[in-house]
Amino acid sequence: MTGDSARRLRVAFVLGSASGGTAGHVRVLADGVRAAGWGVTVFGPAGTLALLPEDTATAAVPIGDRPRPGRDAVAVARLRADLAARQTNVVHAHGVRAGAFAALAIATLPRRRRPALAVTVHNAPPARGTGRVVYALLEQICARRADMVLCASADLVTRMSARGARAEQFDVPAPLRPAPTAAQVAAARAELGGVGRPVVLAVARLARQKGLDVLIDAAARLGDREPRPRTVIAGTGPLAAALRAQASQVGVDVVLLGARDDVPALLAAADVVVVPSRWEARAFIIQEAMRAGRPVVATRVGGTPELTGAGGAILVPPEDPAALADAVAAVLDDPALASKLGAAAQQRSVTFPSQQDTIRAALDRYARLTRRQPARRDRNSASAT
Image 1 (cartoon, rainbow, N blue to C red):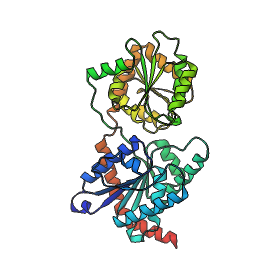
Image 2: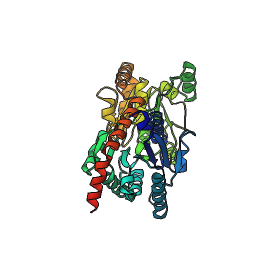
Image 3: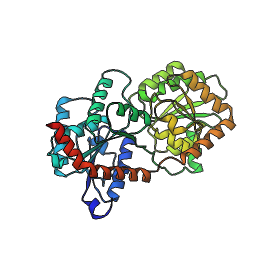
Image 4: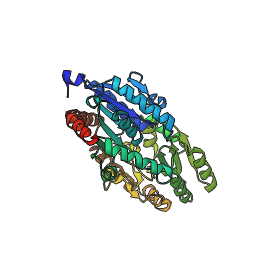
């Protein structure tokens, strides 16, 4: 949809407390949609909005990462008022919490001013605890009230469809970064202490979902090898102290690098990239490692098997440090296998959607939603009587 008709249309992106990955995806969509002539505003908590470029139109809404009834009511009311004032045509929320807030915010708008709602589900529910119960409730709200539910992996499509959603897959591509220079790769390898030693690299948020505790247990099983592998973890998160304590307790050589902006150089310096997650949709680090032609060992969870295909990585069960260690050892012991994996990964990565593909797909869906709005509003009106 282009020209004057597109310029009269407005899309609002709604985010909760988001990591760099989700915020980066929204940044790509917002820039592309704005370039196509749509008006764009991004709503979310101040910390998330700070991850966006300064020229992005934003409005702060305190969507937290856990239930707080008073604050949540304020957030819904503020979001409702802002959406009404901007005469928004499409609301695209990212995450089930943001999706539920958006659904509640637009539910009481006048029928003829009610925007269409799309929700992208980026994650599976927590494995246990009250968070899993709350997440299921948020999923239910999104499934019942969203006009379109976009899911980052096929297993999420199955999950949301079972809840009654109009669900379809919408792949989230990793950002393209410049290839590192030879000097940058050499500097990274020297910093990692990997000169003469194999480097086992993980890049992840330091959170339970990422399975880094399993990686440390696997690294302990590789400690008798000569030369001894260096296990390196790049990223930040709430489990930093716990992971350091675990590594010290089991006596394994693990380096926690913290946040890094030189991931391409780290990938090039690594002998094997390990993604030991308990769940992933289309992990950015797997996409980046495959594009770089690096051998990958990952867990067979979520959307990872679909992403890597049969030959793009060695896949092992989650929560299995022995299997993880065996797979890493197989790559380190067999240069031909490592080369074969890297070549297959790079070849498969050519099929990954680009950011421009993602923007075009989003614009197509927004256009479908705006064409569908009159019928949707009539349906909502009938269901309310």
